[in-house]
Length: 93
View 1 (tube, rainbow, N blue to C red):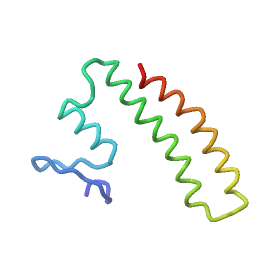
View 2: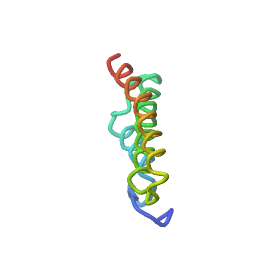
View 3: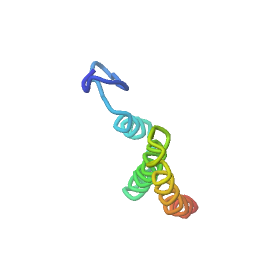
């Protein structure tokens, strides 16, 4: 394991670590990444925006300190409220 952790994708003896690198590799390999440079950029924007929301959510799930939890939930809600309408507009074209 190149980074000492999973996931790892092995292709013809070459090991590719990191889930997002693997996903981008597979998207390019199977023509799922879009045709134009802007299609590819928009795909990256969608993934990165989803990760931004997800990362804030994960903080709320694993926080043990109740005094910090309400602030983390607020930050998650603010992030989701900002990012999700942007994604909807982008995906609608």
